[in-house]
Length: 89
Image 1 (cartoon, one colour):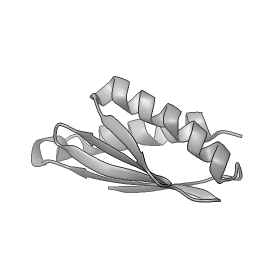
Image 2 (cartoon, one colour):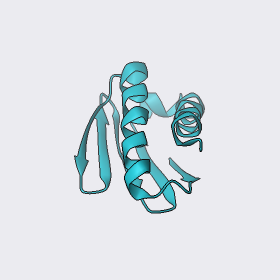
Image 3 (cartoon, one colour):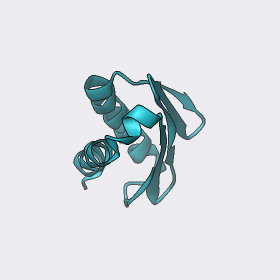
């Protein structure tokens, strides 16, 4: 699954706010995260992906295991909600 959210916060501010997104996803789905440059690597049981912070956008790429793929629409909605909440200007 891929999700892109444009912003005009600049890379540094967006990166700070992505930490809040990671915290939200951790609380909801038990995901762990760590920074690799401007990429936040996320992992969990049946989930792996990256949140890439760019100057004018945040790009989320997530792979779900087969059982979790059945919940893709719910997970996508959670990610989009977190992006909107934390990247609002």
